[in-house]
Image (tube, rainbow, N blue to C red):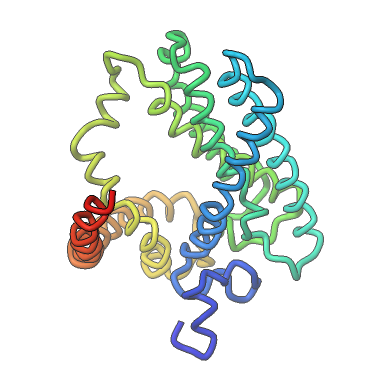
Length: 280
């Protein structure tokens, strides 16, 4: 990040090279995928809106559009799995680009659409807590059911079947954890009260830093993600220790760096708001 190739990292370009993808701040590789997603999302939305208008102009067009969105997301997800398999067969192609991770974005988008289509279903709301069981099972399968070693999963060299399984199961972990929040009933159940608690809300506030800092902290504590020893024992002490230090680092980062920068942004918005209001 301080070499002649600094522009690769500050331009979110590390995703496109197998040698650069985990350099710098390791987890930051996914930010490049997010930037591409945000850039493409308006065009995808416009295309879906146009397609829905062509399919149906009746009163039920909103529901038609939602089902169309799910169908398009399914097709794009299939293409993402196909591209990821192709990348596995060609070691020069990194598996960390937006095309190889779209499934995870599609799950979040699909969950939002499903909450609109099925959000009023009381049975689904009452049983949304099973998403956490789904997440736990998927996580255990990744750890123990795929024949992978105890090393850091994203730095291993799995075969195509193992890689696609990790890709799919990682998505299930994420969507399973989010399921109770998407379909929470009113009044809230126990999980809803937990997710709405001040402590969890505060963790969400500083979560960006937790995400960025957890991997280098875990690597430093564990002597490197490729270190030996019993993986279960190492996980049982490494996970809570990493979480505690990462939360502290993220809090310091938020209050000392992120919030002052956000205040600078807000001051600029306040200065431009009166002019915009006058022009309006």
